[in-house]
Image 1 (cartoon, rainbow, N blue to C red):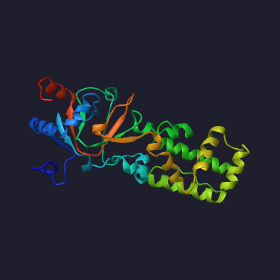
Image 2: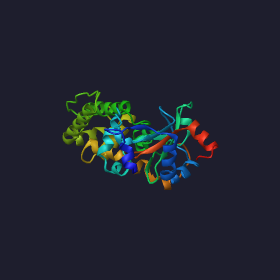
Image 3: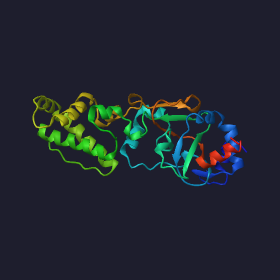
Image 4: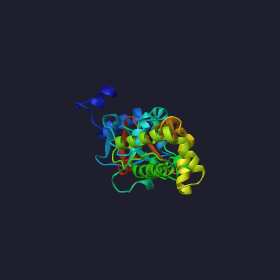
Amino acid sequence: MNFKEFLNEDSKDGEHHKELSEGKFLEIFRTKCKNSHAVAKFTPFFRQDKGPDLQLVTPEYKEERSAFWIDKLIKEIPGWSKMPSRSRFIKAYTDYERTFGGDDVYLLLPLDGTRIGVSPTGSFYRSFEDFKKSLGIEKVDNQNFEKWLSVIQNGFAQLCDAKIKPHEPKTFAQFKKALKQIDDVLAEYRNVIIKNLNLGESVSPEDAKIIKDLLARHVSTTERYLGEKLDPEGNGFHSVRIESFSRAPGDHEVWIDRPALLIKRTKYIELHKRGEL
């Protein structure tokens, strides 16, 4: 039986987490994780999870149901297509302190040849430096997108005569509709907004900075403007094969979209003491 057949054995749709016997785990470990384990000895990947001690996890069998709009936006950004998927993936951290400790901390061992997505910080959503510098947004989540949208809408209402419909989006579709309204207003009132903004009228310096950033970089659509600010390379994200992974200073969130082994940290220590690993 080859490895692909094993992945689908006894499973109609495929199992996201598949319990392994110790013998099967060690077989896969020794034949498919040699290079990965060499990296793990210096830079282990820690993950809080649940289930049996030894598992095979296959991200492609389960789509992450993220409520964050950013995860839907990046699906349409060309640069993110070169990175491991953020729809079907499993994440971990290079710093043990990112877990809560206890008996449900696992070591994630990607199969040899797997590409690793690497965040420049310990949190994917706090790693977008362009948002921090230009908009003062530390975490790119729905709440901060709503705050940003409110600044734009209120600012436009004060800087031009357009009829601005306030949006308080609760879904991604509603958020995209609000972005379309920004495009429509700029198509008709851009010059008026720029003129009144330069006169220093109506809006605070903090809000003016946010609006000016949009005006300076809005070329076609507001969605594309956000896409440029979310560009992975421009924000310090990168992807390498596990064999080439080397830990940069600090804590990093990492993720993969290919099969991997999960082993409880306590079980790893046990097997290591027995000389199995």
